[in-house]
Image (cartoon, rainbow, N blue to C red):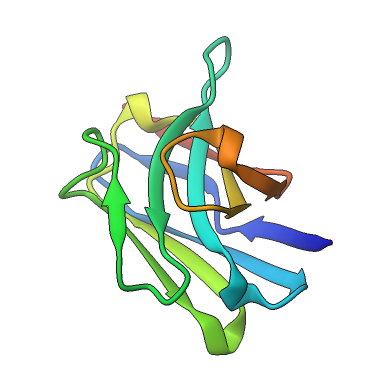
Length: 121
C-alpha cells in the first residue's frame, strides 16, 4: 500500500503561482510513475501531468504546458507540481496519484485526498 499526501494548495490571484507537493509513504516511491489530476466542482477528473519513475519522461496536459511543471525527488519520496500564471479555470481539487505511466486515471492505483486550489480573478 502507498499513502500519498498533497499539500501546497490555497487561494491565489490570477497570474500568481503555487507549488504543490505530494509526499509518499509505504512502498518504494521510485517504483511508480506519478501524476497529477484535478477535478473542478461539477466536472470530471482530468489529467494535468505525469512523470515516469526515474523522472526522465514527462507529459503535461495542453492546458498546463508552458505554465505547469511536474518534477520528482525520489530521495525525498516527493513529487511536485509548480504552477505559474494561474487562471480562474485552474480552480479545482488537485490529486496526486501513483501507478503506471499514462494520461488516464484508470492506470493509477493510489490516490491522495486532494488539495484545493482556488484562483480568483
